[in-house]
Image (cartoon, rainbow, N blue to C red):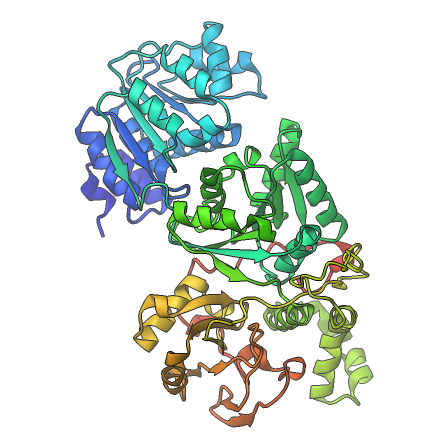
Amino acid sequence: MTKFEALGLQKSLLNAISDLGFESPSEVQEKCIPLLLEDDTDLVALAQTGTGKTAAFGFPLIQKINSESRTTQGLILSPTRELCLQITNEIKLYSKYEKGINVVAIYGGASITDQARQIKRGAQIIVGTPGRMKDMISRGLVDISKIDYCILDEADEMLNMGFFEDIKDILSNTPDEKNTWLFSATMPKEVSVIAKRFMNNPQEITVGAKNAGTSTVQHEHYVVSGRDRYPALKRLADANPGIFSVVFCRTKRDTQRVAEKLIEDGYNAGALHGDLSQNQRDLVMNSFRKKQIQMLVATDVAARGIDVDDITHVINYQLPDEIETYTHRSGRTGRAGKSGISMVIVTRSELRKITAIERKIQQDFIAKKIPTGIEICEIQLYHLVNKIKDTEINEDVNNYLPAITDVLKDIDRDELIKKIVSVEFTRFFKYYSKSQDLNSSGSDRRDRGERGERGERGERRERGSRDDAPTDGSVRYFINVGEKDGYDWMSLKDFLKDTLDVGRDAIYKVDTKESFSFFNTDAEHTEQILSTFSEFKVDGRFVNVEVSNNPGGSGGGGGRRRDSRGRDRDKSRSGGDRDKNRSGGGGRRRDKSSFKSNSGGSGNSSGKRRSKKREGFY
């Protein structure tokens, strides 16, 4: 792969790149940097959010700036305050070894006098939001009449937010002979208008297909009745204990309402929308970046400043009105080479919108069903077991061990394990075992049992039917590896493809959990798969694959399978009576260091839940 040294960047920038830990350029950087360094050209670059666009224009801009002049030479427009500050900070990091370059951010919600004072001292590069930028121009506080470079970052988002007239007014104050670089995830009509009116024969670079979604994101949709939208949201969160997500709503009112309900039900959630003060927004975003908030409920406008690389899931609580907006939503996950999942909760009347989105992003959605309560119990049980296994021992407990040992001396090992797990398991299992089906279409069902579903210390009060039951002749499999072994859905799919020597499309509906996973293939591959994974080892550990007994995918299986020591053991049991030692695939598990590691694992984000209602299972 091409290294940064080959792109024409000067030594001081390469030193900054080395300090930042960048090794190889992304595709958009590889295409843009040499072009912008070699030519004085206008540019339209189409690339998804999270592909490294800031560095793609930031490094060439810094290298072309004359640091000895205090005149403003570069203007970067971005849609939100958060993104404006982020770009400013990144440009400062890129230019850390450049003497005399001053970068100033101007945005609403802060003192316009202080910002004007910073610019007056000399700012070769200004990063601003359109509204504040236009205000400062009208007051004569900013002079952009001599700039050499104008960058429009997230151009489609700025235009979707209603900044079309502001951008036209700002650009009319810039010289005709400047270079304009436009970066956008999509190319709607308004962006084309800006390009035609204010750009001179721009070169165009497209990373991936135009307006298409990124290949690192798996798209899923779940069909529920309208009144079950909120219970479905909670089920999806419970089925993914390590979730670190953005939940999108259409309106500020819905955003606040959903966030408040999640908090009331014991989730680590927060709201982000335009009715919050700037201080409130800063507090929410800081908590989210620190993973003190696991579910950030946001409007599309407010979320446009979010730039966090390890978001595992985007959940579309409601679909947006514009397809381009969905592209931006899903682009919040699957960033920086990692994989992610975009979930959509829809009613049957909205399914036609899914088809329209598929055509636009050129990717198919996987039709899934909301997990059942029993399956969530199983997932949470394995999560608890792994949490206990990975807990670092506090040596101070040694002082109490004699007394504890005396109390437990009459309990054998297996009985003790059952009791420890049951402390947390029993409370929510009792309710979940009687839960109803969120995927049913019965018209007489009401929300009963779904309101106040969180009881004391984590009782789950929900119901449902498991994901993607194969009704099309496909076969569902259980495999005893998961996120703890360094896999996410994308890397596990690649592992299976390479191991089985089948096409990548032959393996689908890959669903990774903490210590186990599921996947589907057509029935014609079943014999090959079971044969391949007979006595199959990775780093000395048996990797077991079996046909799931539960067509919904909870991972039971008939027949016989081997434990991690290669011993046969009978497995003909029902879904509700599965081997309680499944979390390691049967028998002992090696730690994930013995398995191949994948930094993009979608389930490794933690963010401990702190609500007193739900102390366990998170």
